[in-house]
Image 1 (spheres, rainbow, N blue to C red):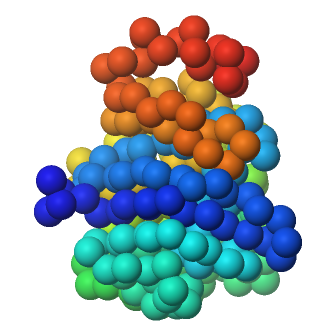
Image 2: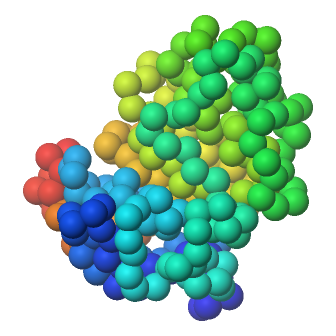
Length: 235
Protein backbone atom coordinates (compact mmCIF):
# COMPACT_ATOMS: atom_id res chain seq x y z
CA UNK A 1 0.00 0.00 0.00
CA UNK A 2 2.85 2.40 0.84
CA UNK A 3 3.99 2.64 -2.80
CA UNK A 4 0.53 3.91 -3.83
CA UNK A 5 0.40 6.57 -1.12
CA UNK A 6 1.33 10.11 -2.04
CA UNK A 7 0.26 11.82 1.18
CA UNK A 8 -0.31 10.63 4.74
CA UNK A 9 -1.17 12.78 7.75
CA UNK A 10 -0.84 11.04 11.12
CA UNK A 11 -2.04 12.67 14.36
CA UNK A 12 -1.49 16.19 12.97
CA UNK A 13 -2.09 19.07 15.36
CA UNK A 14 -1.78 22.64 14.05
CA UNK A 15 -1.65 25.98 15.80
CA UNK A 16 -1.93 29.65 14.90
CA UNK A 17 -0.23 31.29 17.86
CA UNK A 18 -2.05 29.96 20.92
CA UNK A 19 -5.05 28.79 18.87
CA UNK A 20 -5.18 25.01 18.52
CA UNK A 21 -6.96 24.43 15.17
CA UNK A 22 -6.32 20.82 14.09
CA UNK A 23 -6.77 18.09 16.68
CA UNK A 24 -5.07 14.87 15.57
CA UNK A 25 -5.97 14.73 11.87
CA UNK A 26 -5.36 11.39 10.13
CA UNK A 27 -5.85 11.05 6.39
CA UNK A 28 -4.32 9.34 3.37
CA UNK A 29 -4.31 10.26 -0.31
CA UNK A 30 -3.20 7.73 -2.90
CA UNK A 31 -1.53 8.56 -6.21
CA UNK A 32 -3.98 9.60 -8.90
CA UNK A 33 -6.88 10.08 -6.48
CA UNK A 34 -9.21 13.03 -6.12
CA UNK A 35 -10.01 13.44 -2.43
CA UNK A 36 -12.43 16.06 -1.09
CA UNK A 37 -12.46 17.54 2.41
CA UNK A 38 -16.02 18.38 3.40
CA UNK A 39 -17.21 20.38 6.39
CA UNK A 40 -18.76 23.61 7.50
CA UNK A 41 -16.79 26.86 7.57
CA UNK A 42 -14.32 26.76 10.45
CA UNK A 43 -14.10 22.95 10.48
CA UNK A 44 -10.35 23.03 9.76
CA UNK A 45 -10.29 22.12 6.06
CA UNK A 46 -8.24 25.09 4.81
CA UNK A 47 -5.92 24.74 7.82
CA UNK A 48 -5.35 21.13 6.78
CA UNK A 49 -4.14 22.27 3.34
CA UNK A 50 -1.97 24.98 4.90
CA UNK A 51 -0.56 22.47 7.39
CA UNK A 52 0.53 20.19 4.55
CA UNK A 53 2.44 23.15 3.09
CA UNK A 54 3.84 24.42 6.40
CA UNK A 55 1.84 27.67 6.25
CA UNK A 56 0.66 27.54 9.87
CA UNK A 57 2.38 28.69 13.03
CA UNK A 58 3.26 25.24 14.37
CA UNK A 59 2.58 21.61 13.43
CA UNK A 60 3.09 18.35 15.30
CA UNK A 61 2.57 14.77 14.21
CA UNK A 62 3.67 13.32 10.87
CA UNK A 63 3.11 14.60 7.32
CA UNK A 64 4.57 12.17 4.78
CA UNK A 65 4.69 13.51 1.22
CA UNK A 66 5.85 11.10 -1.45
CA UNK A 67 7.81 9.17 1.17
CA UNK A 68 9.43 12.24 2.76
CA UNK A 69 8.66 13.43 6.31
CA UNK A 70 7.70 17.09 5.83
CA UNK A 71 6.40 18.17 9.22
CA UNK A 72 9.60 20.09 10.01
CA UNK A 73 10.40 21.30 6.50
CA UNK A 74 9.95 24.97 5.43
CA UNK A 75 7.27 25.72 2.78
CA UNK A 76 9.68 26.19 -0.15
CA UNK A 77 11.16 22.73 0.41
CA UNK A 78 7.69 21.21 0.78
CA UNK A 79 6.65 22.75 -2.57
CA UNK A 80 9.65 21.06 -4.20
CA UNK A 81 8.25 17.68 -3.19
CA UNK A 82 5.81 18.30 -6.06
CA UNK A 83 2.96 20.30 -4.52
CA UNK A 84 0.89 23.02 -6.15
CA UNK A 85 -1.44 25.16 -4.01
CA UNK A 86 -4.41 27.14 -5.29
CA UNK A 87 -5.51 29.33 -2.34
CA UNK A 88 -9.04 30.61 -1.88
CA UNK A 89 -7.86 34.21 -2.40
CA UNK A 90 -6.34 33.26 -5.81
CA UNK A 91 -3.31 35.60 -5.57
CA UNK A 92 -3.38 36.84 -9.18
CA UNK A 93 -0.89 39.64 -9.97
CA UNK A 94 -3.22 42.42 -11.10
CA UNK A 95 -0.72 44.41 -13.19
CA UNK A 96 0.70 41.39 -15.05
CA UNK A 97 -0.98 39.95 -18.12
CA UNK A 98 -2.69 36.59 -18.00
CA UNK A 99 0.27 35.00 -19.79
CA UNK A 100 2.83 36.71 -17.55
CA UNK A 101 0.98 35.31 -14.53
CA UNK A 102 1.22 31.84 -16.08
CA UNK A 103 4.96 32.19 -16.77
CA UNK A 104 5.84 33.51 -13.31
CA UNK A 105 5.84 30.44 -11.00
CA UNK A 106 9.10 28.45 -10.78
CA UNK A 107 9.17 24.78 -11.67
CA UNK A 108 9.09 22.49 -8.62
CA UNK A 109 9.52 19.33 -10.70
CA UNK A 110 9.95 18.31 -14.32
CA UNK A 111 6.94 17.57 -16.50
CA UNK A 112 4.97 20.81 -16.09
CA UNK A 113 2.33 21.57 -18.72
CA UNK A 114 3.22 23.85 -21.63
CA UNK A 115 1.32 27.04 -22.37
CA UNK A 116 -0.26 25.34 -25.39
CA UNK A 117 -1.51 22.48 -23.20
CA UNK A 118 -2.90 24.94 -20.66
CA UNK A 119 -4.63 27.00 -23.34
CA UNK A 120 -6.16 23.82 -24.76
CA UNK A 121 -7.56 23.05 -21.29
CA UNK A 122 -8.66 26.66 -20.62
CA UNK A 123 -9.53 28.35 -23.97
CA UNK A 124 -10.77 31.46 -22.12
CA UNK A 125 -7.22 32.12 -20.94
CA UNK A 126 -5.83 32.00 -24.46
CA UNK A 127 -8.40 34.60 -25.53
CA UNK A 128 -7.37 36.83 -22.61
CA UNK A 129 -3.62 36.06 -22.67
CA UNK A 130 -2.63 39.74 -23.08
CA UNK A 131 -5.20 41.11 -20.63
CA UNK A 132 -3.99 42.39 -17.22
CA UNK A 133 -5.02 40.27 -14.26
CA UNK A 134 -7.24 43.08 -12.95
CA UNK A 135 -9.30 42.95 -16.16
CA UNK A 136 -10.11 39.25 -15.89
CA UNK A 137 -13.49 38.17 -14.60
CA UNK A 138 -13.70 36.24 -11.33
CA UNK A 139 -14.10 33.00 -13.27
CA UNK A 140 -11.12 33.75 -15.50
CA UNK A 141 -9.02 34.61 -12.45
CA UNK A 142 -9.95 31.28 -10.90
CA UNK A 143 -9.03 29.42 -14.09
CA UNK A 144 -5.71 31.29 -14.12
CA UNK A 145 -5.08 30.44 -10.47
CA UNK A 146 -5.54 26.73 -11.21
CA UNK A 147 -3.66 26.86 -14.53
CA UNK A 148 -0.67 28.62 -13.00
CA UNK A 149 0.24 25.68 -10.76
CA UNK A 150 0.05 23.25 -13.70
CA UNK A 151 3.15 24.86 -15.24
CA UNK A 152 5.22 24.04 -12.15
CA UNK A 153 5.35 20.26 -12.62
CA UNK A 154 3.49 19.70 -9.34
CA UNK A 155 1.86 16.27 -9.15
CA UNK A 156 -0.17 16.89 -5.96
CA UNK A 157 -2.62 19.78 -6.27
CA UNK A 158 -4.26 21.37 -3.21
CA UNK A 159 -7.35 23.30 -4.35
CA UNK A 160 -9.18 25.53 -1.87
CA UNK A 161 -12.80 26.42 -2.75
CA UNK A 162 -12.12 26.84 -6.47
CA UNK A 163 -15.82 26.86 -7.40
CA UNK A 164 -16.90 29.47 -4.85
CA UNK A 165 -19.08 32.28 -6.21
CA UNK A 166 -18.58 31.40 -9.87
CA UNK A 167 -21.10 31.17 -12.72
CA UNK A 168 -22.28 27.63 -13.54
CA UNK A 169 -20.54 27.63 -16.94
CA UNK A 170 -17.18 28.37 -15.25
CA UNK A 171 -17.81 25.72 -12.60
CA UNK A 172 -18.46 23.19 -15.38
CA UNK A 173 -15.20 24.18 -17.09
CA UNK A 174 -13.27 23.69 -13.84
CA UNK A 175 -14.91 20.29 -13.30
CA UNK A 176 -13.90 19.25 -16.81
CA UNK A 177 -10.32 20.41 -16.12
CA UNK A 178 -10.15 18.36 -12.89
CA UNK A 179 -11.29 15.24 -14.76
CA UNK A 180 -8.59 15.82 -17.38
CA UNK A 181 -5.92 16.31 -14.70
CA UNK A 182 -7.01 13.12 -13.00
CA UNK A 183 -6.72 11.28 -16.33
CA UNK A 184 -3.15 12.62 -16.57
CA UNK A 185 -2.41 10.92 -13.24
CA UNK A 186 -2.29 13.98 -10.98
CA UNK A 187 -3.32 13.64 -7.34
CA UNK A 188 -5.81 16.24 -6.09
CA UNK A 189 -7.05 17.29 -2.66
CA UNK A 190 -10.01 19.68 -2.77
CA UNK A 191 -11.64 21.74 -0.06
CA UNK A 192 -15.17 22.41 -1.28
CA UNK A 193 -18.32 23.95 0.11
CA UNK A 194 -20.14 23.26 -3.18
CA UNK A 195 -21.17 19.66 -2.67
CA UNK A 196 -22.80 19.39 -6.12
CA UNK A 197 -19.46 20.33 -7.69
CA UNK A 198 -17.32 18.03 -5.53
CA UNK A 199 -19.51 14.91 -5.38
CA UNK A 200 -19.12 13.69 -8.99
CA UNK A 201 -15.36 14.40 -9.06
CA UNK A 202 -14.02 12.76 -5.91
CA UNK A 203 -12.89 9.16 -5.36
CA UNK A 204 -13.01 9.57 -1.58
CA UNK A 205 -14.34 12.02 0.98
CA UNK A 206 -13.27 13.10 4.45
CA UNK A 207 -15.71 15.01 6.64
CA UNK A 208 -14.20 17.43 9.17
CA UNK A 209 -15.70 19.05 12.24
CA UNK A 210 -13.94 21.06 14.98
CA UNK A 211 -10.47 20.34 13.55
CA UNK A 212 -10.89 16.56 13.38
CA UNK A 213 -11.87 13.95 10.79
CA UNK A 214 -15.26 12.59 11.80
CA UNK A 215 -16.11 10.43 8.75
CA UNK A 216 -14.42 9.07 5.66
CA UNK A 217 -15.95 7.12 2.79
CA UNK A 218 -15.59 6.32 -0.90
CA UNK A 219 -17.59 7.60 -3.87
CA UNK A 220 -19.31 4.20 -4.06
CA UNK A 221 -20.67 4.74 -0.53
CA UNK A 222 -21.90 8.27 -1.24
CA UNK A 223 -25.61 7.48 -1.60
CA UNK A 224 -25.68 5.60 1.69
CA UNK A 225 -23.95 8.49 3.48
CA UNK A 226 -26.33 11.28 2.44
CA UNK A 227 -28.20 11.23 5.76
CA UNK A 228 -24.95 11.68 7.66
CA UNK A 229 -23.82 14.44 5.28
CA UNK A 230 -27.10 16.28 5.74
CA UNK A 231 -26.51 16.14 9.48
CA UNK A 232 -22.95 17.50 9.27
CA UNK A 233 -23.22 19.82 6.26
CA UNK A 234 -26.89 20.59 5.74
CA UNK A 235 -26.70 19.32 2.12
